[in-house]
Amino acid sequence: MLPDQRQHPRKIFRTTVSIFLNEGRGYEASSVDLSIGGICVTLRGKNLQPGQMCALSFNLFTRGKAHKINTVAKVAYSVCSGNEFKIGFQFMKMDAGCTAAIESFMT
Image (cartoon, rainbow, N blue to C red; front, side, top):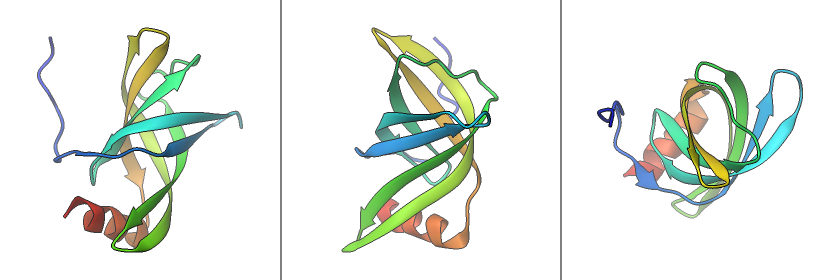
């Protein structure tokens, strides 16, 4: 087994995550956990390759407020687990408001 290469603490986080690929196709995934540096999701029926760039969109509720998180992310890993893939994304481009919302959620 490979050592855990995560750079930031994770927190369990459950929501629907929209994944948009460069060719315009969109997929709905379920989140597993979240950190300031990335998110892990499960996705049925579609494998994404490490290094692949995607746009992600999801809602985050923290401290009584709803935040729409829109970001560009890179696939860090994808592991087959039964009939779905567990995919880790590293956030690449995120505005200050989204970063602040995730930081608030993590504390």
